Image 1 (cartoon, rainbow, N blue to C red):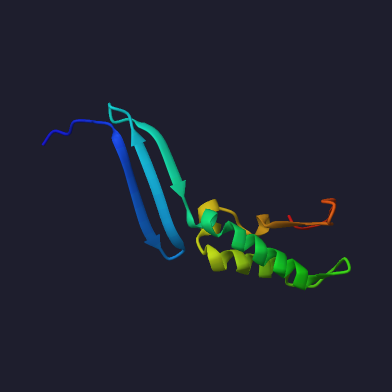
Image 2: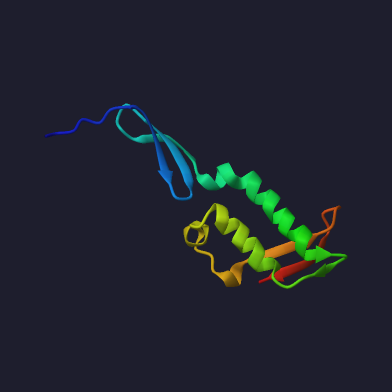
Length: 113
């Protein structure tokens, strides 16, 4: 059976362990990819991830002193929302870095590499 290329739009939604993945593809009349949009679970969960990382920082940082375990807690928070992020981004633990900033945005300290 011979396939003839044609244009159009296709939309798919897939439920996965880390959340819902939505994708849309737009093809030209010759069947070439013209546009693609992806909405991945990390995007959907980004606001909640940021709030929980801030909560961890509030728990582990007092008066400029950082209690041990902050990096582990932050990684745990991120993986709770997106267990695949480490492999998907191909980053190892050694590359995990946290910047501690004051309310003015000035860098106070860096943890990790």
